[in-house]
Amino acid sequence: MKKKKKSPPAGAPDWMVTYGDMVTLLLTFFVLLLAMSETKQTQRMVDFMQAVKEAFGYSGGAQFLPTDEILVPKNHDEMSLLILPIHPENMGRTSDEGPKGKRDRVTNIRPDEYYQAGGRFNFKELSAELGESEASRVVDYAKKELVGYNTMIEVRGHCNKRPVEEAGFRDHMDLSIARARAVEKILIGSGVDPQRIWVVGRGATQPIALSNADVNQRQRNDMVELIQIDKTLDEFKP
Image (cartoon, rainbow, N blue to C red):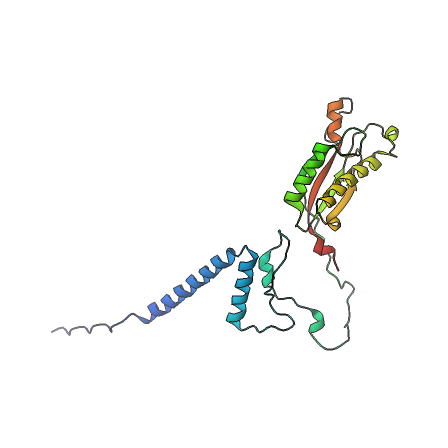
């Protein structure tokens, strides 16, 4: 006569409880990721930082998490505000600077990345004065795309190969720099930080149109380019 098997104990097996806890934690983790990905507005970022501060019991001090109004450039990554600042002077009380090696600074050997920011702005032949319509284009673009950011801008001047002495310029480089300076002045007047601007003259060395006989073709080289550089102004500040 076969013995009757005993019924399993009531309730879920132990592994299921552990599995359920793990799934709950994963769900909580993904909810946090979703919430952090939506902190695009400054006030929401401040609220999130305050919640983290309260949850982890961070009481503050010299390196407290900022909770006041935060003013940052438009293209600044607000998530970096969660990184606590570290000041070496607060790491110890000794006045000894310590030994320094042969290379005590980090040097970026990666070349800067350049990309065209606002197109080309055309000048009349042998002139360093920007026309009214082109000047308006510069102002509109500066206010829409450049003001409030902190990336560097190269204002690159060009000209065609026609002799420039009759227009009062020493050489082609002189004319191209004068054109770049004219655009620089408009950018600054539109609210762009002058420290962000690099003025560069290329003379007639980088023509778009190679033909110098055709007037319409060679005048395509009478222009200024706005080149945005993948380097921020903060990288040049001490």
